[in-house]
Length: 116
Image (cartoon, rainbow, N blue to C red; front, side, top):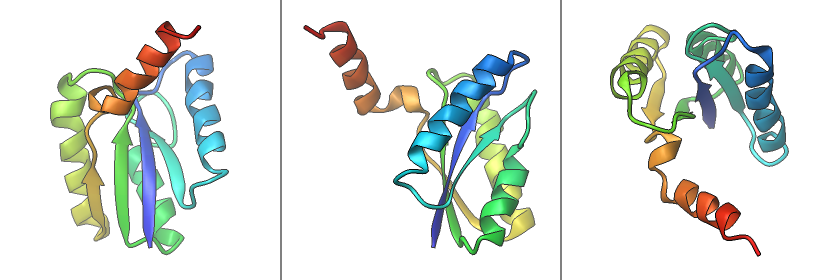
């Protein structure tokens, strides 16, 4: 059974974290075994989300980093974290490209800007 993690940066500003939580709630209407994790400054952290999915019977996890650009977190921190958790918790974890690299993201921006 597959599971999913939305990985957000995390913020000291609760409204920012709440925005990510709202996205999770909407996605849960159609996607089973999906969790939100924060890289820093907020809970749950990545390992906690992995543990929760594993406890639910998930055998593989796909991670979507909710980052717009390929900065240090995307290029270095997220892959290292996923690899460490995979080994520590004995579960397969695949990390997708950050959301800003997805062509659907570009199309969404285009549709917003060109809305008639």
